[in-house]
Length: 327
Ligand code: NAP
Ligand code: F7E
Image (tube, rainbow, N blue to C red; front, side, top):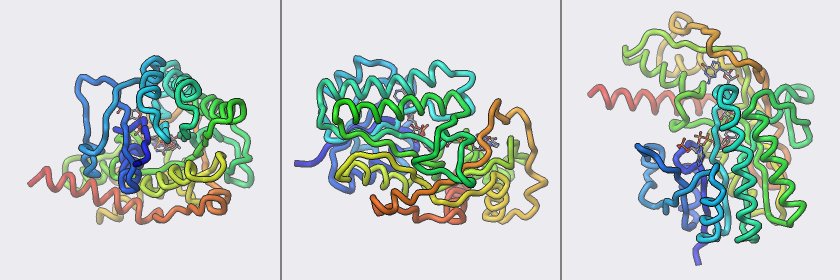
């Protein structure tokens, strides 16, 4: 019989890439969606898989909806990707961020414990939990957490609750501590997509200036399509554990900007970029770089897409979108 997986966050960035991978492996995929006045399947459409998903309704903040869902579907695997995932919004919406990202995970884990204790659970943890903490400029599974935003704090709660259900009830739970990963379907608010979309608009003459915040922040940026393979591999492993996932290389926002303009054939990038302090955060995370050795050793996972290829892929996809629109 085909394996079943429930993917929360199915309409976001990672949900569609993961669902595509699981469908290719023969899974029946349930995708959790909340109630919307106006729903968008654009990201699933981009990967051509909308019709293959079994949509189920629920909300991470509504415990009873998750209890019913797990009881009804009893999936082999649950990948919890749903979140208020934008760090920048988490100060103004700290309670909502906590309810979705922290309590939502507790509700899901309780549902598993009560109705489907053999279900394996993947939690989308994040490098934002490290904040300013590092050893010699990088982070691994043993680096202590020092989150710098309500988002990072909510994810630390979810991380430990995921560990605790493993230790208390012997449920197969894993944390993937993923560093930034991007793609042509990355949300528009995140800096990479804001840049590639802006560069494409400038190239097409639709915009002249791109306003950004801190150009000095450094991130370990990889491709989402590579990272969903790590999520899958964690749940296929013999024992549940927690893994840092990243490329092992980092770059500044400034480097990303320069490269994006270069791939669009624009040389005078500084003419088009304006620094606007309104995009600065109350507390910044200045420097993140993964040491993903454990994942490489135990899961056989390694990032495949280079920084240059990632930027090129995103710029080309946005240029294509605007070229098609302007025909
Ligand atoms: P994303 O594009 O923002 O997608 C998150 C999804 O969660 C959206 O589809 C959103 O639905 C859904 N969601 C939000 N609140 C919900 C609720 N109350 N009930 C049900 N669904 C809800 O995020 P992503 O980049 O794919 O990231 C996936 C996960 O990995 C997130 O948990 C994120 O925090 C984590 N993460 C991401 C990165 C990264 O670099 N991308 C790195 C580390 C960890 P709507 O469509 O309705 O908004
Ligand atoms: O910011 C700086 C900003 O919003 C990256 C989420 O997926 O990855 C993501 O969180 C950096 C920060 O991502 C702008 O200050 C400068 O230093 O793209 P971002 P993030 O905050 O790193 C982690 C791993 C997650 O878990 C999150 O869910 O870029 N920056 N200028 C800017 N950032 C934004 N958004 N906009 C700017 O104009």
